[in-house]
Image (cartoon, rainbow, N blue to C red):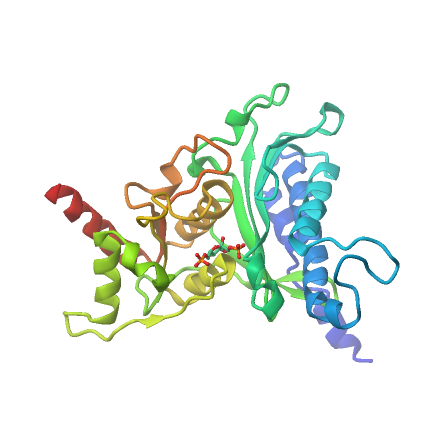
Length: 341
Ligand code: AFP
């Protein structure tokens, strides 16, 4: 046994250590936020382990209506939702939960209540599960205004009021990306230790990018600025090279690549869906928060995405997010369109 190597391994920056380090910068902190994050991380580890077995489930007879024990099987997105709701409620630090899977917000019973509101999509991109493509969990955290009387207004706040946001990608490796408002850090799950290790400290998105990411199948319904931008990506008039198109159809995976390599992710409005497809609270806001924290931008076609004030918990919005300069271009195209009108 290589004791020296083992000793080295225990000096790793785990996510718990990272969060506790952050907490120590605020002497008044009671540690509630660290406890909440620990519970989110636990939920992600659980979902990661279930997702990893998803392909096997069919082969060994765990899928379908009932499993080998005769118990009813749950769809992965339903199961993931239950995992996160339980993890969040049992943290004792939450008061309102908004999940993509639940029509209504969950108000935590007073005896288990804390000060945080968590908005989340437990398993985003779930239509990709059966073919083994990367999927993920997305979350954002707000502080309740009055912990004695939490109301829906506590989660209908602009994204800029979020205290933290992140996602966990269940891909070729399991990656947890987090911002608590002071930059963005990425952690990779070491399955042998069961710990997320800091592998991508202080992520900064490149200022420009060579990749655009959009569902081009919707092109016939796009508005002018989106169509012009994508045309420019393919046929640049300034002598630069064309951009590459990459689109997975799983927001966590498309945004993760955009964050690391630069470029832009677009889910615009179109004639069929005037508000786009993506949900404000648990898709647009957390990803926009991360982009801004990494030095990029996020825009809705009308305004900075994080300035949007949602009126409903499952509201949708168009979004353009990614490298600073790419989003500047989109903003200029929308501004020009508005001037014409
Ligand atoms: P699913 O959860 O239904 O797979 O939707 C995924 C998603 O909300 C988001 O993760 C993708 O970016 C987007 O939808 C893809 O939408 P299109 O299939 O319309 O391109």
